[in-house]
Each structure stands twice: as C-alpha cells, then as structure tokens.
Picture: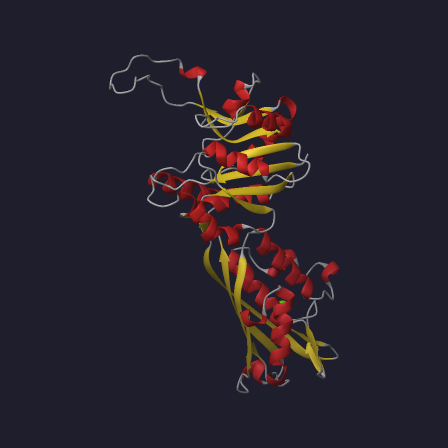
Length: 384
Ligand code: MG
C-alpha cells in the first residue's frame, strides 16, 4: 500500500478572525497536528499541504519538510483538492483528502479509510449523528419535519479514494463549485461511497470553543502532565585493604577499596537510590538483594542500567543529579571532572545535569578515621 494525503488548509478563517489552521494548539498549530499524523504513517509516502496565498508565504517554507510539500489553494475547496491532486507524484494506490482543521485525526482512522478505499473505491470517515435532527426550511424558524436520526451520519475527513476513482471524478466534473466535498462527485459518477466509523474526537475546529475542546482531547491523549519530583539516596561502605576502589563507575588508584557484595560503588548506589526515591520505586536492594549470590562482585553500572530502565518505563526524565561524597582518603578533587563525566554517561545524561563534590569528615568518627566512605545524592526527576 502506497498512499498520498492531501491536507486542505486554504481557508481564510472568517469565523475565527484569522486563519484557524495556524492558531496555536497544544504546543503546535492546528494544521501541524494533522501533518504529524500523516507524516508518521509508513503507508503515506507524500503529504500535499494546500495553503491560501498569505499562509503560503508565511508558513509554507517552514512546513515543506520531510514528506510534506506545499501547493497553492484554488478559489473553492474543490479547486484546492484539484491543485493537491495535481501535485501527487508517482504511483500511489490511494489518496486521502483531509481537512487541515481536524487536528485530532489518528493513524487508526486513516488506515481504516485506506483499507476500505482500496477495496471499494471510496471511503468517508463519519460518525452517527447524536442529536435529533429537525428540518427547518430556509427563512423560517419552524420545524417542518423530524427525520429518523438513524438514517444520518455526519461526514468527516479523511475522505479516501482509490487513485483512479478520484481521478475520474475530478476529470468528469470540471464545474464542481457547488460540491462541498469530493465524495459528492464520486456519488455523481454513480459509484457508491462507503462509510467508515470514525471517532467523535475527530471534529473540525471551526469556532473558538472548538479550540478549548481540542486542547482537552490532545492533553488527555498525552496523559497526565509530568511534575518535578525529588529523591534522596545515601550509601556507606567500609574502606579496606586488598579491594579495588570503584566510585562513580571509575576505578581509582588507591591502596584500599570499598567492601561490598557488589563492587561497593557508593556513588552509583546513592545516585540510583535517589532516582528510585523520586519515582517512589523503593531502593536498589529490592532488585539486587545483597543476600543473592548471583550478584556477588556485581558491577554497579548494571544497577544504573536497571534504574535508568525503570525511569524510562515510567515515562520519567532525570533532570539533575547532585552527589556529595564524604571521604578522608583518597583526595577526590583531582577526579571531579572524570567522576562527573562517568556518572553522566552511565545515566545517559549530558554532563551539565550532574553535580559531583566531596568533603572530608574532619577526622571525626569512622569516616574521619578513613575506615569508610559514604555518599549522599539528590535526584530531580520529571515524572507522572
Ligand atoms: Mg552500597
């Protein structure tokens, strides 16, 4: 399946004061949400964006990227569809025509219309009418009839056609100024137009209150907003002769090392506990119990990988790690830059998101006597 999409955004926006396609919506503009949907679909090889003259000059150069090409609108909607169709390049099986102001379109709906169009020639996304319909003749404010609602669907877009079917309709009906959508031309060709059940969320943004509802739909799809969480971690290990000294994922030259079931890397242990703390996911001992013989001699970078994977799975982002070592020996200042770079790289963070510093314990207690090294860490995390 190879298909093209024509996104029609040629309107001048008389009801919204300015072209509604370029009003801001959930971090982008109205029309960009449609472009994103089609551009992300493997089946869509090209997206033809049809813009009015002012929008073309102002936004055309920026939007003509990736699969998107920009062409000028015609005098009417049908003229715009013709211009878009003329720009479709190469062999495609189907063409989806979409209103640029239906920002909530999803790949699932597009796919359903593509499948039906290839099968039967023409498919229109639509929803059953929810309200009771009243026929009110023009110029009167009196109901003349209540038709059976069950017979009515509200047509949306995409309206998707097999390439040859749309070509035939556009060639046969050159004078089509009265048609409000191209599926009417398909009907005039004597062909049937299939209806594909769509979503009520795929409404057209026409009036200012539609923008408020569109924001709500897109925010709901994105999930709950993330907020800043802070986690704290602490670790301490005995400093003994005959062990390698591992800190922050680096082996430091020293005649003693940290005693532990793993490599004893107090920096990584404290940092991981801080991240897990911010996420409310317990502490590293739960996934790597010190009693489990399979973790004997574990490289602590494995613990970091586990922690980073937990954060990613929760949709969280580590914004900053602040690490404070407390050690009488060795002197750590010469290692600050290397330690910081190592911790950042293990967590997949840019170095400026990691702070690392060390203090002595002023000769007091076990750390002061050089019998242990401890570490404190604070993690700032964006999470839901
Ligand atoms: Mg530890």
